[in-house]
Image (tube, rainbow, N blue to C red):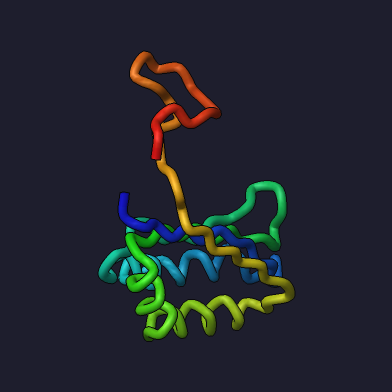
Length: 117
């Protein structure tokens, strides 16, 4: 398996600006997904907290993620969310050591990892 980088985060913004921030950020999300090595990139609204936006990213390699952080789309994202009245931010990156489907071949969900890495 190649190295996969996962970013999971949450930010809090002015609740009056959250939905417009997500709507107006859609094109930036789409363009970011076109970057080399971007497997997933999305901001999404928390349905129970009007101020919270979740951030989810998946990158094919550390180099691809580093290029994103050094690039224009990252700066635009930072500025876009910052303009929404950012009050809190947490983003954690994970280097994935093992990857398996949740459902096994018979359709049963499993929490354990059955393949050797």
